[in-house]
Image (cartoon, rainbow, N blue to C red; front, top):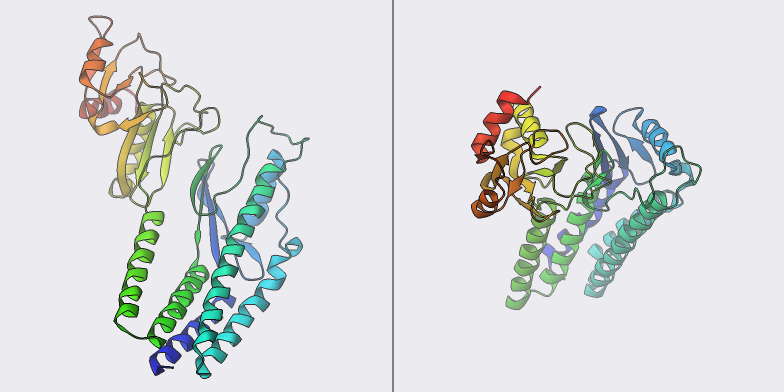
Length: 346
């Protein structure tokens, strides 16, 4: 075995020690009533809040909607995970000192399988907590579930939930990459090096795509809440979204709420974070279109949820055909911002 492969395998093993001291996964919750946010860190043998009382606060909120209490002591995976990581550290050290390439293969395959099983177990855990609700809960919404995302962002009533690997989870991924690289180096040839480059590019590309997906997300009418006013978004002809460069989505019950929120928050650097604005096409309920290129019509003939009465249209022709009175005012994106700034912003 090449010396470089041994060093790679040694590093892949030792880096796993960090998982004992750093959180593996991070779940955060944002809502208007919690300006500082709430969150949980999933550690190798425990679950703790971002702040001292976050776990208790989340359990209290969950009680109202019928979710089970999150009790780290009752989760068996947290009791066996320290032993699993210890196994991979010791097995990896053995593979780095014994010149057997098949040991690296076994280590990599087992770590991949354990990672997949772990993610699937996390999904099942979230499904159980989000779907198996107490029928006697104080707040009951027919058909509503509260499963957090395994990876990414999801709207849960008026909460925006984010779920991403924390530092320990990233170390696990780095360890796996080092192990795969050690295998290729041990079998060093031109084709192997090309494979290393291909795997690296694909991995990085997938990570960037998943982490920073800036596409808008469909509004779940009747369940999603406006990020500004807190009202449930119920009318499929009205609604809007802000998407950030990191893929975070803010949903609103009407375009005026979105613009007002933007005007209020851009002073605290939200403007630099924004990737795109989206609004519902009035003539195709539920369809999100680029708000900056949409056509607007301010008219009392169209009653919006917040009474600004300005539907959005995809084309100028659609907008012009929708004019009903001589007092109807056609607008573009800049006109809309000025009108909201003048008439509607708190």
